[in-house]
Image (tube, rainbow, N blue to C red; front, side, top):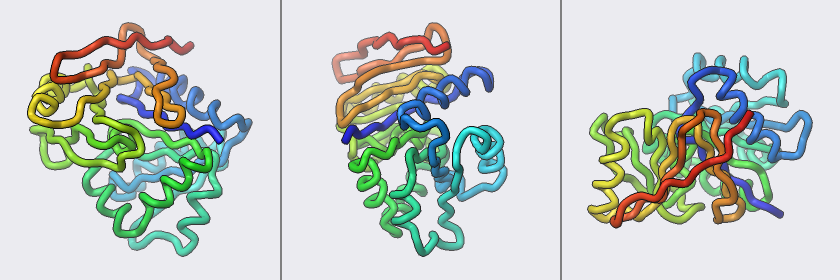
Amino acid sequence: MERHIVGLGGGGDTPAQTALLNEYVLGLTGKERPRLLWVPTAVGDDPSVSLWFYEAFAGRTELRTLSTFPWPPENLRELILSQDAICVCGGNTANMLAIWRVHGIDRYLREAWEQGIVLWGQSAGMICWFEAGVTDSFGPQLEGMDCLGFLAGSACPHYDGEERRRPRFQELIASGLPAGIAADDGVALHYVGTELREIVTCRPGTAAYRVSADGEERLDPRELG
């Protein structure tokens, strides 16, 4: 059973560009109309964000939402393991992971991954799968934090989209954060098992980067569309 994780550094510049990323990920399920679980924990289950997601995906997928407020559903494990793909919202990664760990969602997501359910998301939904990530969960200054550890190393989204991301990721690695990978907005990192299989983008000229204490290496993606 192939295990898939797709981390998006951020969305495209237009809805049409972002739709290319979404189609790329949904195509990994091999289903014409996949069962898709939306996990908006990182935005406190904000209904306005979920409305946007439903507008984008309801016609393309069999869509469900995993809500954790006021509490998760009784059939939590069954809900998670009955999907073809699971999309994790961007937002506050630290708060999200704390809630997941209290309710065992992190364990069920690992089980889902091991069963071949495609895991994906952007920003918080990108870094959560790695050992560590760069996050604004604690404020705009950006900090490193421990994440789920399904994938080795650290990760940084929005590498070209937020001015402080690039220098701060390099500072944190120099200070002891594990070396890792960064992705510009519009760039998707596709892992099969724990190995990076492919990098794609919906924004021309963007890239991913291997970042270590010795510097960064540009990784050119395949352009979608």
